[in-house]
Length: 283
Image (cartoon, rainbow, N blue to C red; front, side, top):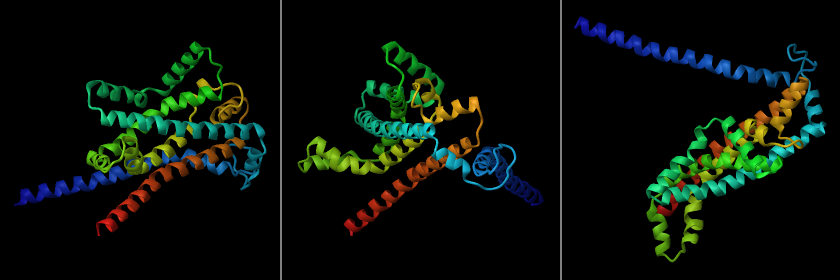
C-alpha cells in the first residue's frame, strides 16, 4: 500500500511539473517572438527621430508615410498584386483541388504529391527559379512577373485547403443534384461551390495576407518601379533607417492580422449559418 501511494505521488508530481514547464516555455517563446513586434509598434508613435530612445507619443511618422508618394505607390502595387493573386489562385487552386479529389487514378495521386512540393520548397529557391524562368522567356521584370510568381506559389495553398473541405463532402450530394436534372456545371455551381464557400473565403484571405507582405519572391521578380511595399522598405533601410519604416511595418502588421482573423472567423460564421439552416429545414 505504501509503495502504491508513493508511486501515485511521484506520478502526480510529474504530471503537475510538466504543465508548469510547458507554460514557462510557451511564455518565453511568446516573449522572444512578440516583444520585437511590440517595440516596432511602440516606436512608430515615437516623437523623436530615434530608433532607440522613446521621446513621447506622436503620429508624425504616420503622416510622413501617408504623404510619401513613393511608399503609397508601393502600397497600391502590393494591394494590386495581392488582390489579383488571391482571385487567380482561388480559381486555379479550386480547379486543381476538384480534379485531385474527383480523380483517383495513379497519375492523379502523383500530381497531388507534386502539387504539395511548393509548400515545402524554400521560398528563395522558388524566387530564383522564377527569375531564371522569366529571364529565359525574355520577359521584363515588372508587376506582371511578380503577380505570375505569386499566383504560382499560392495555388498549392488553396488546393490543400479546398481539398480538405471537399474530402468531408459526400459524393451523394452531387449525385442527387444530377438525378434531379442538374448538369455537371449546375451541380458544381449550385451544390459544390456553396458547400466549400467557407474554405474558399479562408483560403482567399490567407493568400491575400501572405502575398501582401511577401518579400523573397517579390524581391527576385519585381522590376524597378513601382516596387512592392516589402521590397521598397528593404531598399530604404539599406540607404537610411527612418522611423517612418516602423509606421509602415505597423500598418502591414494590422492588415495581415485583420485578414488572418477574418480567415478564421468568417468560415466559422458561415458554418454556423449552414448548420442553423439544416436544423430549420430538418425540423
